Length: 90
Length: 195
Image (cartoon, rainbow over all chains, first blue to last red; front, top):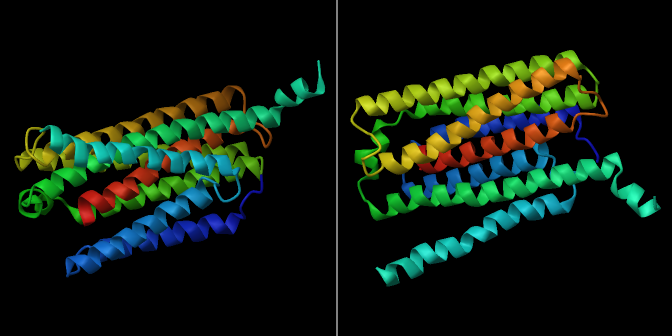
């Protein structure tokens, strides 16, 4: 496994801190549509940075990434049950 | 013993298998936490008074500070792994892990303070938004607490049999767990507090 360079961790950490600060400031913005879009983009960026660099998915076997994605996909049937099947039963 | 059997039992294969097991566990955790996050989202979508009844009681600056603390702790976890994997420096590993414990405890302290403030303002487990909020943040906090216990266990183990450049899988697996807990908080911070 290729190990990321020492400096990358610090850069990722700084980006995460700046993003968190920006998110906090954006949360006071209006209108809601712009606010939610910006917050969603920043949250996805932060999650991706932690996964790729801190958890080394960028350098590790692809199967680890697939397992993480599989977890996200497995929730879809649950969403369908809650949003479609449950209201039909009720 | 055949060559195939030997390669299956080699340290590299064992290391990858252990990491695979950790990722399988994290895959299950993904399903678990997404379900919990959906609980929050659905309760918000079905009730129109989230802003006035609940969000106004939340302290965004306090939780932003808590988020900084948890993200910083993640940075010290990678520093700990780096210290042992690249530098083979057991002392630096120990110091970084002690900082992780302190930051983890600070995070839990911040969460406890928030919970007490909400209880004092009349938001509890029986309220509409309090129920999913306390459930999700409580389960996340429990994960942080387990992580702290895990670090303590690693530090005690490091005293008996020190981690080395070649033997650091325990630190790596703990790191995966801790970063995952960090990721969950990043999403919760956005979904519960900011949006």
